[in-house]
Image (cartoon, rainbow, N blue to C red; front, side, top):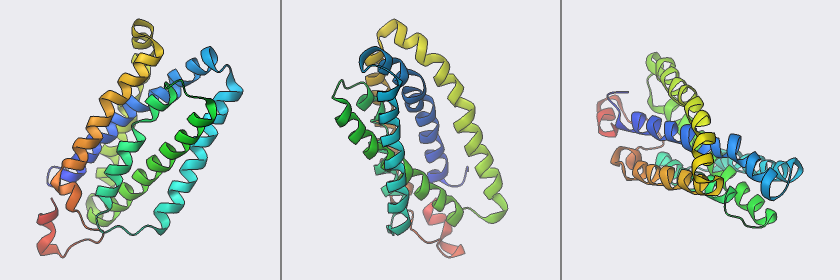
Length: 199
């Protein structure tokens, strides 16, 4: 992790996604649906659309062969971080469902390309440890976001909090895309002597 900038840069972006973006779906989305749409049936439509988009993103990732996969993944994350703003947009449910499908496809594409890069470029003897840190950072921080989403939205309003979630997470995804090691990481692992160039 210390040797490869792209590894810890992606872990930081993953941490932001799990702390800032996911609570918009898991906590505030159902609250807003109950207040404005109203109810669980309409919320399930938006969530199902996200799931269908995720299937499409996985299918796309299966066929896609980008030369710089992490650059594509980072670009996809910039779309995925807009999920909170989509939910809080006040648009008609059909439009929200369509946009949620797009964000679902982007999030799935991000995860597949990122996991493939880890499998390709991290040495076998270190892969389990890197994955352990990755999982700990993502899931370990998520309860913090879940705990803060309610009080923050109570103080500032649900819609304002959802827009703030995107305002915080979207620049982080853009910064990830700006990291040179992320943009230039190739699809295939370089020869051992050239490995340092991708760090």
